[in-house]
Image (cartoon, rainbow, N blue to C red; front, side, top):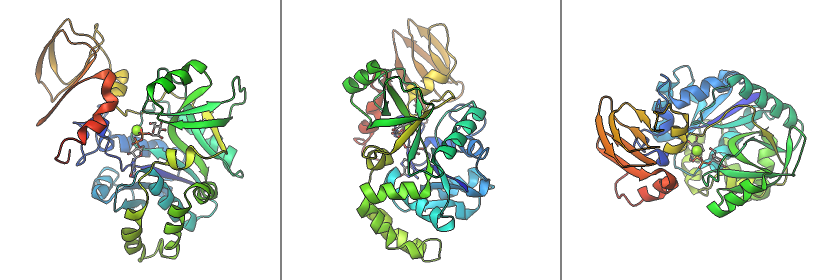
Length: 351
Ligand code: GDD
Ligand code: MG
């Protein structure tokens, strides 16, 4: 009964200019391990979910890329979205497809761009979540102990001193501003949302019924067509009409039946250059250098990522992101990296 929804339709715009709309970061070997992020995610999920039950959700633009990078996957497992509508419509669509196949399905919903090395711990955590929500109408998420007021994550509040392994969630707050994030960290009873969710298929549909009824009803009008040859036409029309909203805002924030399991593995969402910086080896001045040959004077805490063998000379620069990628160059302060996503909207070409 175990199924996975692997979400691989984002553009990873905070990872520009390596991640672009034409080749988003999940299709890159960002860590230099020989495997792309989506390949790593697939094999991690496959340690607990049968390969044929792993559904990959992506924009129709990336369908061929997915098939190329995951050659053992059948085309029915690659679910194509005709428009970018963020993660709520994507999860709803996949859930309806899976429910039709197996109404008792247990789902893990996973992003395609995370760094998780301790795969055995990951598998154990997911198993424990499956056990917790198999017969309960609850939504489960994995929590990460926060280390700084990152404004790019969801924050999960649980009772102070909650000693249970699986904790009841008091409040879910998606991407708070810096001040709020700082307050949360100080309070101590908050975890970051890892963005990995576990539930039975009926529970997530119940949540959509409660909090996203228009979206659910829109998709239900074509429920008979789903998994038939009429599906494509229905989806081509219905999907672009769905609200552009993430699961975090659409379902997790309003829901009252959430439980969190603090993850037992080290985690990094590789969402930004700064996040990658944390996982890379560094020189004596805490510079992380990928590919470049560097001469650095009085420069500390930078991440420098270029094409192979590029010679880079830098003086008096601290805590910057320097990314040289073909015809694009990014020079930006690390502490303002969350701005990159919005800034790119001002470039009038498709980035
Ligand atoms: N199929 C599909 N379609 N996938 C999508 C879409 C879409 O329209 N939009 C995003 N994704 C995929 C991304 O590729 C990524 O793997 C995952 O969904 C999450 O999207 P992000 O855009 O990376 O979300 P986020 O990082 O801002 O926030 C989420 O993850 C954080 C942890 O990494 C939230 O769940 C936060 O609460 C969480 O802390
Ligand atoms: Mg992310």
